[in-house]
Image (cartoon, rainbow, N blue to C red):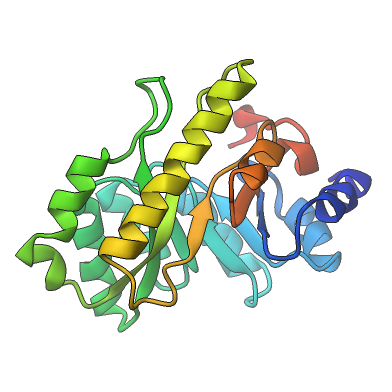
Length: 224
């Protein structure tokens, strides 16, 4: 872990922006090093790796699930996950609700929108999201709470394009807040921005950034 880089990032971001340190593929010792500096919010994108780290690390850590989530993996994270950033289908949200009910929890979730040009990224379109939120089936979900939106911008050198994609996500958030969540004080999160583009995301209104390699260095997927 690069302590100097971590402190520099903390000094750059506004006090109302939450830093989620993305610790996927990183050993527990590096998570603990960040924890000892005061970091409490960590992001993982593999359910079983998250389960193992939760078992071994301090219990006041707030674990964020940030990757593409498969329905058959939800059961591993539901007992303790703080926030799921990557709800990209109603089927997935239904299964999160079902598992949360088993554990008598209400689990915080973010709706992931497809704002990038790459087809490899997941997420709702605005029309799909509206159809879900207006359905009777959605109203039956009692063990999930939608707390905001998440999106990933295109991996491009075109800074204006990145600005526009993040701006689009903020516009989606505003529309959902006004039309569907005006009474929900917890609908307040705009999760956007990673190591390479978080300054732009903050300019466009991000409330939560997901930063990994800028803190922990490049990932070694061979050790997963």
